Amino acid sequence: MTLYVAISRNYILHDTKVNLSITEVCLNQEQGGKQQMKSSTLFVAFATICVALGATGIVSAHQTWIDIDAMCVDIGDTVDVRLTEGHNFAGEGAPPFDVSAELVDPAGVKTPLNKTREDDLHWHSGFDSDQIGLYTILGRHVDEFWWKVYTGLGSRPDRPNSTYTYFPGEVNWSEIDKSNWTDDWHVVRHYKPYKYSKAFVSTNCDFSEADRASEQPLEIIPLDDVATTGTGDFEFQVLWNGEPLPNGTIAITGTRDVETKVSAICDDEGKATLPLNISCDWLITANAASDSAYWDGEYNDTSPHGENYTGPGGFVGNDHRAALTLLQLRGSNTVAMRAEIQSEIQFSVTPTYLDFGELGLGDISDPATIAIRNMGSKDLKSTVEVTDTNGLYTKGLRINASLWGEFETAVPADESVSLDAELHVPENFAGSGEMEGTIIFWAEAI
Amino acid sequence: MKSKTIGIVSLVCYLLILTPCAYGMGIGATPATMEIEVGNSESVQKTITVSNPEDAEMEFRVYNEDESIDWIHISDPTFALEPHQKKEVTVRFVPTADEMGKFDTKICIVSLKIEDGFNMGSGVKIPTHITIKEAAVPVYTNPATIILIISWLCIILICVDRLRRH
View (cartoon, rainbow over the protein chains, first blue to last red):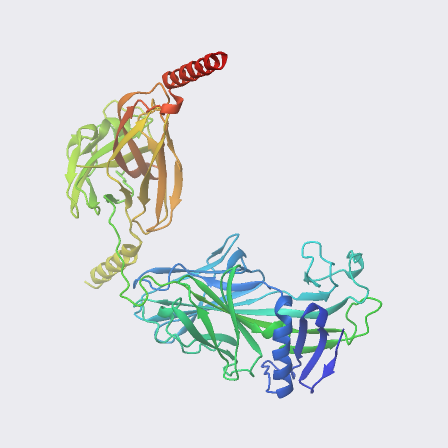
């Protein structure tokens, strides 16, 4: 059964497929950049019914979220910020097309986070956490246009229970195999997805200011202390351009994995409570309830459709989604603990390059000072190994006036020793020009 | 006097610019030594954590110093580490049935900066003492045990057969 109901100029209900349990509620928006959904009793009532009917029909769309290693970091740490897209909190690839990120530092200053690289799974950026307090990372991903097409039950061999088929980008409709499609197939939506993501990082593990809005167009705000995530009910608020949407408009979901999800519908204050009873990493997402609200756009009666379709055409507009990454904190509800075990052997040699200058046969270079710093937990015995192909360094390099092969020194833990290296050019050396060789400073625990 | 002042100021600026860029050739490794006890035909593995303590990316190579021992396998013989990154490298000891006794070798981890001229590197040697013992043969696979069981079965069958004839 297909039902089309015009509610007002701004709210149009259409394309209600009861047998599919999917109802599309669309919100036609006035021209202009900022769209708003207004209260409507009928809208709310209908949306509520839609939620009830549409639960099985909600298609798990690509979500984009921020991956970070930890929410509590040390001051001075470099925080790796990664944006990924996928389903059910499992990343499947780097988000394509328009991706950007911003950082709000503890002082409230917003700066762009530049892309540093991209791999198969992530769009990478990062920052140095050099201030005490809370950092908020904001991501924005604008995907290409997608087509949502009603193709009928059994039209997708990969998803027998699905009645919709999705296509990205440009589609050549005449070349698509429609043999499994119903004869009233039609474009339901042609939409551009806007995906907003958010994550928190704190250098003092204090998230008391995480309940402040960061001016994302669609934003999830944790009202409870994120340090308590995983201990029970957790209240969120979802704002659209800083304001709550009518009761029933927004669905919020907490996802641990494909099998562990909890959902709720936001009330007229934009608030909803999720039972986050498992201590683990959670991805909180928010989008139009029952996948049936259009944020803005208009019908296009020239949209492609089957011969028996008689509806108003596909809806062309935007879609907005939000994601908040909440990671499990170490020692939540207690004092977070951290310890870094020193390497047993760790040392550094400076400088990294020795230049003995221009020398003649029989010459002795000026001494070059080399420092060995022991940063490990054990005392070290250091030796030197020299290799070359011309014999210059193997025969002529002296460390602290001894031939390198006889050199050995102890470097106590947390101390440094300095050495003098000299090059004695043998009288009978035959080569000329720049001479290559290698010196390795070896260390063993004693 | 004026040119001398400019020279000093220039030198100070030069040093200030260069100082943050300076880094050394560093390396970190844990443990400092390894004691391995393994049966012949068995395998044991140990993990070495290699770290880059420097502010620049470094390349590392891990190898067994005693090349005559071909039953020590390194999981990642070469790799690069970002500044202050760590990596766990697995060393597997898989002696053959013929190997028995005590062996001493060193697992070497080296980081080398390759440039034209005189190259520098830093390395860690981890003394590794390996004791290979004869692997304990499970009772059920011991040939003597199998012969004994078969003998007892034969005796039981013969006894049963004789009892039936009587």
